[in-house]
Image (cartoon, rainbow, N blue to C red; front, side):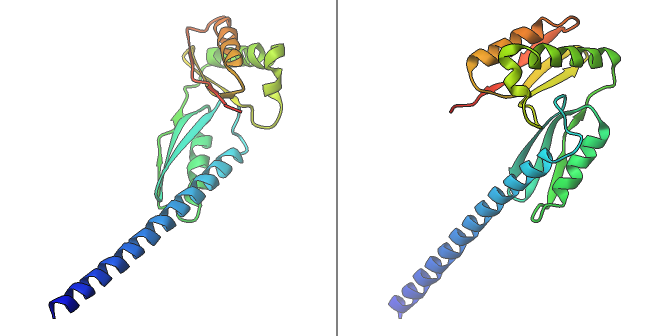
Length: 178
């Protein structure tokens, strides 16, 4: 009798483990799918530009949006497209809307020309979504995105520091390993 009870308990434990493992694998696949779809939907936003930076984090069926945008409508548009993704249960929208400032707008234009108009960095101006994001808040600049090598990262930093009216530059550019 004890042996039979032990066998039943072991069988139940094995089945429970198999079910839990299958649920974990399904959850991992769902998280991977949601991550791909969030990236796609955010990149397809029509008014997402070089002066906006939207990042995200997927935790199971919850998505956290982060970053900075120049338009309040872009913040709400990002949240709305992510909410519509199948499987997303909650969206925590932590995107910051940058303050309206004619001086920051002038700095943005000058930074764009200084970075994307400079010969060695012009290759990054190709395509719809430029990989170097220029974030300006009250004269302080943050460079986000990706570049091909450390030299391009340093050149972008030097070009940004040379723009009149810039108080500080934070270079968060990542070098993509080939």
